[in-house]
Structures are given as structure tokens and as C-alpha cells.
Amino acid sequence: MGAHMSEVKRRYDSGARKRQAEETRAAVLDAAQRLFLANGYAGTAIADVAAAAGVSVETVYKRFRGKAGLVRALRERALAGSGPVHAEQRSDALRGEDPHTIVRGWGLLAAEVAPLVAPILLLVRDGAVHDHDLARLRDELDDDRLRRMTDNARALHERGHLRVSVEEAAELLWTYTAPELFELLVLRRGWPAERFGAFVADALAAALLG
View (cartoon, one colour):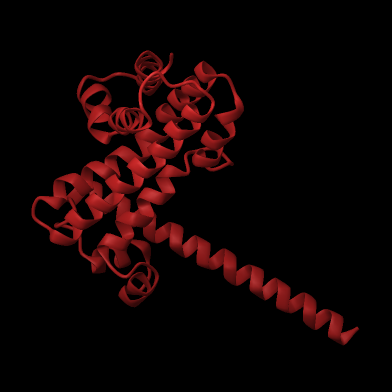
């Protein structure tokens, strides 16, 4: 009986520690996003993030290794989307559908994910002008997005859906998912996210599908 109770307690303690770690991580990321978007990358110090999140500076460095690590984690969180299943998993699940359904699905995901991730990527772009670490992060994130778009293009090609090369399709997908397009149409021209997603789907269908 005593051994059983000890095991239950260990599991409870482990679960409680995990939940607390997740809550701390979320609090730090929420604080970092608020401060970065309000004050810019250069205008935000790790100490500011720690104070806003109610944790020590050491905790932030231990978990994220610095400001670039915070931005990378914010981008990863945003890419998950707002649903219970990660947006990239939902994108992969579309690959067995007919091509127009696939592209419409990508448009819906763009409408969901772009409002979350574009502000972070635009922050990186703007800060990269004066910060070498952020410039390297910008290039890393751009390359990562191009690899992802190449995978999507190759999936369409393997099913005979593309009317252009895989390379050109990947570059078009990369362009239509760029934060700059969201900035122009949504942030500057005031398009609703749903209209933006429909535009992306229609443009990709016209450019890619045979």
C-alpha cells in the first residue's frame, strides 16, 4: 500500500512540475511577444521579459538562451495555429485530397496562421537590419520555410498535379506565404484574414495546378 501511494505521489509531482514548466514557458513567451511588438527587438531586454513574466533572468536564459531563442520559440508557437492539432500536421493530412481541395486547405491555414506568425517574422525582418544575430535568424527561418514549401510542391508533383517545376512551385508557395504579403494586404490594406486566405488559395491554384 505504501509503495503504491509513493508511486502515485511521484506521478502527481511529476505531472505538476510539467504543468508548471509549461505555464512558465507560456508566461515568458506571452511577455516576450507583448514587449517585442510594443518596443521592438532592440528595445526589449531579457530583464524586461523576465520582470513581465514574473521569473528570473536566469530562467529566461536557461530556457531560451537569449532574445533570438525567444523569437524562434514565438515563431514555432505561432506556426502551430489555433486548433488542437498542429497546423503543419493538418497541412500534411491534406496531401491525399484532390489538388484544389489541397490548395483551398492551404488558404484556410494561411488565414489562421498568418495573423499569428507574420508579426513575429516582420519583427525579425525589421530587426535584422541592425542585428547580425537576427539577420542570421531571418535567413534560417526563410530557408526553413522554403524547405517546407518544397516538400509541399514535391507532394503535388508526385501526384501529377503541378503544371510548373517543383522548384518554381516551391518559390511561388514561399512567396505567397511570405509575411510581407500579409503585411501589404491585411495590415496595410485592411483585408480580413478570411479574404486573404481565399486570395492565397485562388492565386496558388492559378499558378500551380494544371
